[in-house]
Structure formats: structure tokens, C-alpha cells
Amino acid sequence: MNLLANQIESVLFVSGKAVEESFLKEKLNASDKQFTEAVSELLVKYSGESGIHLLRFNKKLQFATNPSYAKEVEAVLNPIKEKELTNAMLETLAIIAYKQPVTRIEVEEIRSVDCTYSVQNLVRLGLVECVGRKETIGKPLLFATTDEFLKRFSISDIKDLPDYETLLDKLQQISVGAHVEIVEKPMFDNVEEVPDFLVGEDVKKVE
Image (cartoon, rainbow, N blue to C red; front, side, top):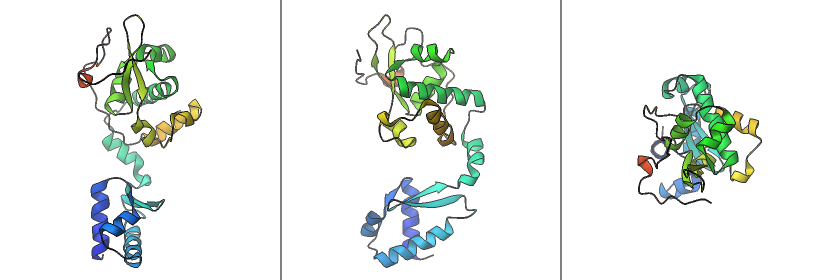
């Protein structure tokens, strides 16, 4: 494999996200011909049965896992073994997306089950965040989805959400391999104090 191909390979590996081809050519001082040949070489190497595939889209390059091994990736990287628990998190996320800003209690009224565990892990994954407190008895925390949620599930704007069932299916498909840290101690108690990781943050009050 030529030197330029090796350099591109290294950059994409360290980046972990899409990199514009024009930016790569500029920084690596490569001509259009040299770049095309190097990328063609990488496309051959990272294809077929290889565990890593090279994606080329919208004049960008990015490494991604081979979708053929999605189940194996999920089995190794997803520490949550109970399918029902995973579904609970996805259902909770979908409800928050549609009802935001919403309290945990309000989500539980819709699902008819305790959602403490689901909410706390969605927060740790960066898909949901605390946006304030509801001006009612007890001033419970309000939750909404984050930019990471939009990015991960390829939604340009919260106004572009599909219908509930379509969104839930999409969440289930893209959640493969998501790492969720299992937390033994509940993050929120009945009084719903601000969790430790939010202490000191400027929590906006929502009327």
C-alpha cells in the first residue's frame, strides 16, 4: 500500500468520524490523481469480509464496522443482556423526544412503569439532558433530547421527527453496539435533587 494510503488510513482511524476529502488532500499535499488512487486502494482493502469498511459519502471518508457483524459487535459491546431493559430505554427515549420538555413522572404515566433506570442511562449516554425544573409541586426535573440524539439518529431537527413507531424502529436499529453503563444506585430520588454530575451546571428553569 502506498504512503499516502497509509497516511489517510491513520488519519481516519484516529479521527473516528467523517473527514472531508478536500481537507485530506490539502493537509497531505496530495494531487487529485494521487488521492483517488490512494482511496481506491483503501476501498479494496476495507471491503468484503473485512471487519472494518471504508465509507465514502458526500465527498467525505469514514471508517465503520462491517454491518454483517452487527450482532457480534452488539454481543461484545452492549453490557445490558436483558432485551426488555434495552427496549425500555428506547421507548423512554422516544417518549421524551415527542413530549419534551417532560418530567420522569410524566414519562412513567405514559409507560406505566418506573423509568428511573432508563432516564439515568440515557443521560449518561448523552442522548437526554436536564433542562430545568417544572414549576409545580416538588419542582421535578425536566428532560429533553440533546444534539447528540439528533446526530446519532440522523435527524436534522426535532421538528422532523417521524411518527412514533417509525422513530422507535429507527432507534432500535441504530442502537446496536451502544455502550450503556449500568448504575447500581439510582440517580434520582423521590425529591428529585440535581444529580451529582449536574451540580454547578447552569440549569435553565422552564415554566
